[in-house]
Amino acid sequence: MSGKINTQLFSAHEHALEHDNLCPKCGSPLAMRNSKRGPFLGCTHYPECDYIKPLAQNDGHIVKHLGQPCPDCGEELVLRQGRYGMFIGCSGYPQCHHIESPEKKAESTHVPCPQCQKGNLVERKSRYGKAFYACDQYPSCRFAVNAKPVQGSCQECGFGLLIEKKLASGTKLQCADRRCHAYQEQAQDQSC
Image (cartoon, rainbow, N blue to C red; front, side, top):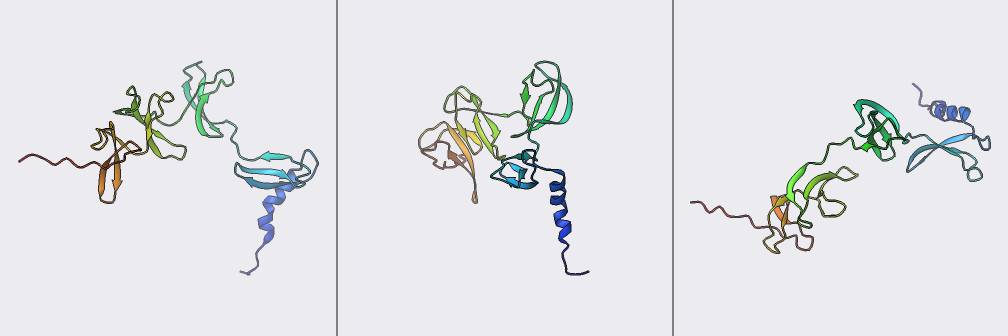
């Protein structure tokens, strides 16, 4: 096998794009480019010509038919790929605007919210997939913590919620109040 690299193999894909895709505005060839929103075809005479054609499909196209009726209108529910990820929507869109998240519903921890005293804390996921716990009365109550909540009161300040903190020395309880964050002393077993 020779040490030469066949550059024709590497440029074949780009050549096919140039051959099939000419700019509809000025007739110049289109070239593949990348941006933070994904790949696109752009005119080679940029900035004189600003034509672009996105290659990523984030337009709400249907990925799968789910075979379940929409609770609002009775049409079939479908799984769609949108700009912000996957979602379940009604196939009757735009007449019906019903949408849901494909993820499971938030489970309640049955730990009362220390801020509003009305709701319970539920597990949620950030847009990066990290778990956090927030009040189920959102948006009227915006209380949230990043660690698992535990019922109890702080020994230092009396705040009505503790969180589990995983350390190298083991799991410890910490005050959930951002101004305190005191670690709690473990209760000694008084049995003889």
